[in-house]
Length: 503
Image (cartoon, rainbow, N blue to C red; front, side, top):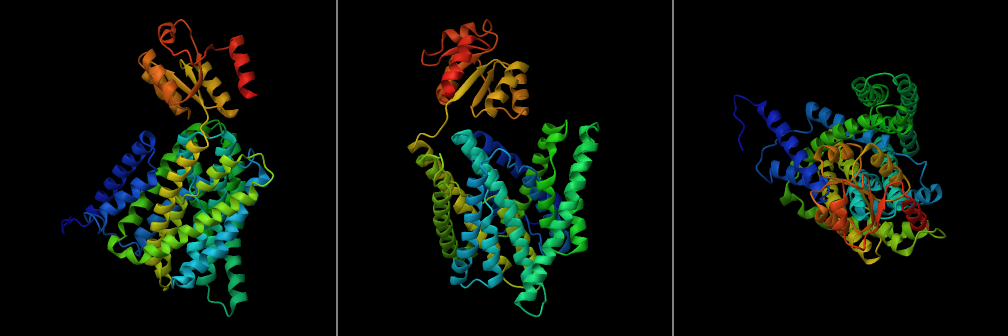
């Protein structure tokens, strides 16, 4: 597709339209069909690039696009690390699982990559990027599989923790190859020093952010949103000003320390940063994939297969060792071993360093982008299929509790049930209240009749149906199959049911 010569800037506007359209389609398919957003976005990027219609011809090595990509990566990383919460996760299990996985990847993957004649810098960066996983792929996958709540939380938190660890390791790795020291010891010292500056600045900004968040309690939500955005981007800019290539580690350190739970606008704030992150990652994914030439991926296919096979073996070993003498059942261990996708942060780091490598006069940026593109796609497909098979084979899907009638009381009840590890599903005949429940991060469905209620109960493998406003639902209840106990909200029957259910 040719851009009119009299208006070369039109490519920016067309690119923005394409990215937004890709984000809409990706979000829709993710929610309705369960296809990970990353797959759709990468597909759109391939379509827009030279392997497709040739719409996007941006030079990612030039200062403007590189700055845009850096900004998008910063937003994605800051949003991801803000979600890390280790307070309700088994510390020993998740610590050992993350340490084993990261250690084995850093030890074995460079050897595999070097066996395919990758330069030392590219092989080391491939290993560092492979440390991170894909919490934004794992989250929707857990919502679809509905395993035990504690297990889902462990897997999601592990992904978030490994993302933070992987970013710092990648920063140290790249810094060690881009210094000009006199020897290996001096190189290691300069690399650690550069990242240490970033971490120190991030910690300082994080503590300042915590104080700032407490001071913003009475501020309006729109001001708080801008303050949080300023904190993330400002931390990156300050770290880069003090020490080049230390910005990403500073953003991660800052995000780990800032606590949004102290704010009255927490839900609105999280929704805002997730939407902003979705736009940023859509930009990163589409631009990355638009640089990929499918015909040039052939030489990268065998190395990608070797790396993915290595990651599978490492995942199995790390899960088996870290779950010894734990109450985690064997079926759940198989599911844990199956969940190892690489996602948002892996893509972000791959495109970030693929553009930084030639900027420093080094070689191999195109090989890094190509092999990581294939590794990410392969791990997502294999992980999704394997986890679905494991969940069905070992019957790990938790049954739902249907709550008929969406009211402030039923929303509060659903939130309490979810916090206790149950899987509540709210249903109502009013579209508006269904949307309101979804805005509170709850699973909600629209129904028209008792037949719809029956179908949802069967589809979600419901254990029982809890009814708010029994008179309103009298006709629908009369059509419900006898296999689903009908419990009136707040009744003695409901209390006895949950005592039995918990045991």
